[in-house]
Amino acid sequence: MIAASGCEVSPTGTGGPGAPSGTDTGAATALDTLTIAEARSMKGYSREKFPHWRDAGANCDVRDTVLKRDGDKVKFSGCNVVAGTWDSWYDGKVLNTPTQVDVDHMIPLANAWRSGADKWTDEERGDFANDLDRPQLFAVSATSNRSKGDQDPSTWKPPVKESWCVYAQNWIEVKSYWKLTVTKKEKEALTEMLGTC
Image (cartoon, rainbow, N blue to C red):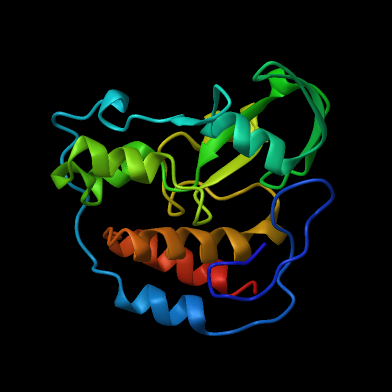
């Protein structure tokens, strides 16, 4: 897996990124290019405006793809994941049943809305919500995903501090690619997290 700044990361067990193999300034440079702006209004927001879990072939969807990619010994019944093991890199938990696993959007949909996605078309928001080409979708514990909610790093960080570097790099990569804004406090928190690299 490649971290946001382009440095290689090694997996922490069965899935998800691990500690970076080296420190670079790519993510910090990218962070400095992001536009700082106040969070926009939530007026008009709904998750339905981010059509997600698109078809990924063979009647399976993007969520199934992430669960298979990030898990170990994943078993399916049709397209339903029925078994496997996942390492939740946010909180260090090992998950042995798919009911404990959520697929998290690195940049939460509501955060994207407040950061500029409110001006996109539903098709563009769907591309964002199903983005498998950037570090936007990860299988993590349901508890960590729901604890995070739609918060940015100024109010929520992964409980495992060793994940902060890669988390910040990934956050910056996704925001940079999609040209989303950051708040002042968000940038400060990301800078702090990059300091752990």
